[in-house]
Length: 188
Figure 1: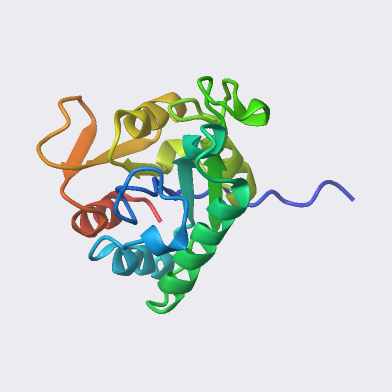
Figure 2: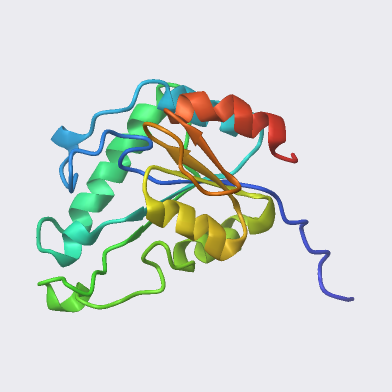
């Protein structure tokens, strides 16, 4: 009896949260501030139907800054999951980094390998969801998201106004606009 056959690695979608799935109102730490970006739930449902694992990877320095606690982050993620379910969509894994070196909450006031653009959360997602990061896509609206993609060798999609002037980075105004492009190129 040898080891069980290993499951082949698969591509996945690593999504930033604020500014990608929900509107970035700045340190969204309460459910009443959760506002979905138009088309994002449908885009996530499309990834789900294609069998692509979807993880959220989000820096939540508001915890380190004392603006809200880890329970608040969990409640926001529960609200997101409940809303997505109404669209037949789901997030397979929510990951967040509560740490920031300038934090005022002692337990969270430090640097962390999980804080984007460092690769910790992507590596955790890869381990939990059996992802091939080199075949995966990171989607977000900040330079840290592009940095994360570069750190792990994933493809990068930048969401926002204008183009992100970097080779190998594709720019779109929204997750809804990016989804068809990703679906055409991801090797499922």
